[in-house]
Length: 250
Image 1 (cartoon, rainbow, N blue to C red):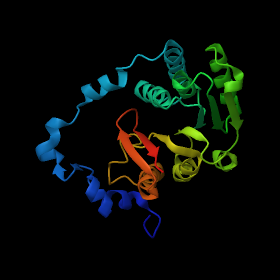
Image 2 (image 1 turned 180 degrees about the horizontal axis):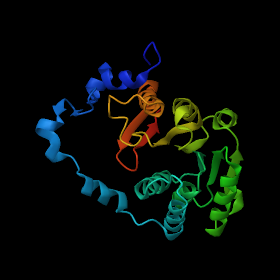
Image 3 (image 1 turned 90 degrees about the vertical axis):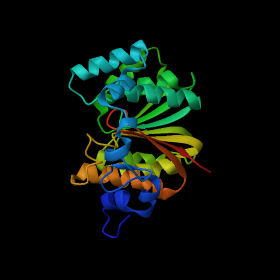
Image 4 (image 1 turned 135 degrees about the horizontal axis):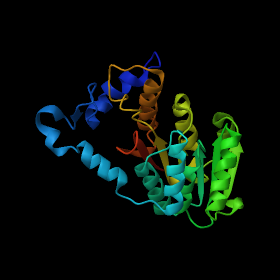
């Protein structure tokens, strides 16, 4: 973190950024100027769209997502849902925390990949949304005992959860609290567990050094905090509005 607490500059200008290929213009990868020599090796919009839609989600997840889109709620993309299913399945996840229940779509995606006995703890300040999400889960045949919803402010709830007890922590809550969520996730995850942050490229604004909106700056700070903690192996995935997955190291 910089002395003034603004990490937009830290992420893009730090020595570590230069080692990992992040520059202030976000146009250099491993020291190669993308505009001059690397553009042909990068995915274009059509390829990124194919990656988004490549996986056909299970019917319950797909239909819930399509229904939620019609209500004009912000819903994670098809590719993000597929990634959540993939990661939960790879971990055979038995204990998962979700910050931001939302429309319940991401919960269904997680359940589709989790161990059949796994329990999802989902936190949201909107109790009405949680009721809808629980109904979605029930309609999908998920036992009520597997879906633990907690209505409340995430930063009040997370400290009450057990240390090193979770296989996966998915963050999709208040964007201005992402840095604090990362710190809590580091405590909650077991070794080998995975932290997933949604929307980390925030509508294509995080990579734009001229943008200093609050959400943009906080996303940069959250990305930097994952690097600075030193106990994660991260991967930034260009799905949805940016998805960060990070394995908790020993």
